[in-house]
Image (cartoon, rainbow, N blue to C red; front, side, top):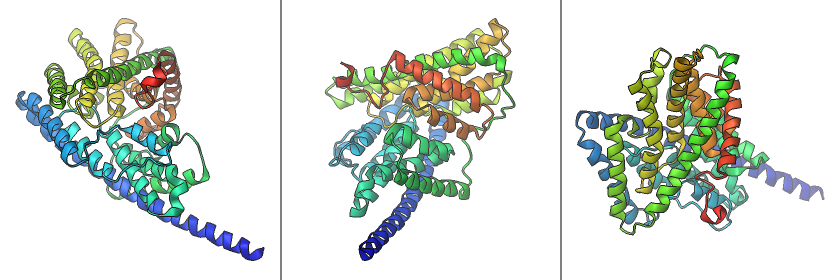
Length: 426
C-alpha cells in the first residue's frame, strides 16, 4: 500500500514538474510571437499609412494587394482553409478530436500582419490569440501526459499573448477564463500564472511600453449619470458592430468568386479611407492623436460630424475587411469605436448641457465599455484598458460602465461574433 502511494506521489510530482516546464515554454514562445507581431505591425503600418497619406492612390492599391496576397497564401501555402478566428479555439477545446493544426501559427501571424498593414480596419489581437492558442495546443499534443490539460495549455498561450499585447497579465488570465475556458481549475491557475509571468518578464526585459500614454488625474461623482448613458450607448454600438460583421460575412459568403469579394471589400475600405483616413488599419494612431489634446478639444460642427462619421463607418470598414478575407477580430475596432464615442459624448455634454465632464475619462471608459459589450467579458475589458493606459484611476467607473454595457448588449442581442451560429439564432 505504501509502495503504491509512493509511486502515485512520484508520478504526480513528475507530472507537476513537466506541466511547469511546458507552461514556461508556452509562455515564452507565445509572448515572443506577440511582441514580434505587435512591433512589426506598428512599424510597417506607420510606413504604409504615411505613404498612402501622401498619395491617395495607395488607399486603393494597398487593400487589394494585401487581401490578394492573403488569398494566394491560403490557397497555396495554408491548405485552402479560411481562418475562423476564435471560433477555431472553441471548436478545439470543446472537442476531443478537433485540434488546432500547427500551420495556424504562421498563417495567423502572416495574415494578421498583412491585413492591418494593408489597411484592413481590424487588429492583430485575434490573430495573436489563435496563433498563441496553437502554440499551447501543439505543446499539449507532444506528450500523452498533457492530453487532459488541452484547454489549460491553450489558455496559457492565449494569456501570454494578451499580456504582451496590452501590458496586462490580469487581462490575459481573465480573457482566457471569461471567453475561452469558462471554468477555473488548479491546472488552469498554474499554467496561466506561469505563462503570464514569463510574458511579463519578457516584456520588461524588452522595454515594452503601454500602448497609450495618458495623464488621468481624477473623476467626479457628478458624472455618474453620464457614465451610465455612455454604457448604454456603448452597448448599442457594440451590437451594431456585431450585426455588421455577421451581416457582411453572410452576404459575402454568397459570392462564389473569391476575387469579387476582395474587390468589393477593398472598394468599401478605399471609400472609407478617402472619407476618414483614421479608419486605416487598427486605428490606434488616430486614438493616440485625439488622446493627446482630448481635454482641450473644442467641439465644432465639422468635428462632431467627423467623430460621428468615424464611429458609424468603423464597423462597416471592419466588417468589409473580415468578409473580404482579412484576418482579425473586434478587439481593436471596439477600442477604436469606444474612444471616439466617448469623446463625442463628452464634448456634446459639455457644449449643450454644460456638464463639465472630462473628455479623456470618457474616451478611456468608452474603450472598455464597447469592448466589454462586444465580447461579453467585462472584467477582461476593465484590466485590459487599465493595462493599455497603465493607470487605474478610473477603475470604479470603468467597472460599473462595463457591467452596464455588457448586460444591456445581451438584452439587445444575446450573441457576440464569437458565439453566434445560424442554428442558435433560429
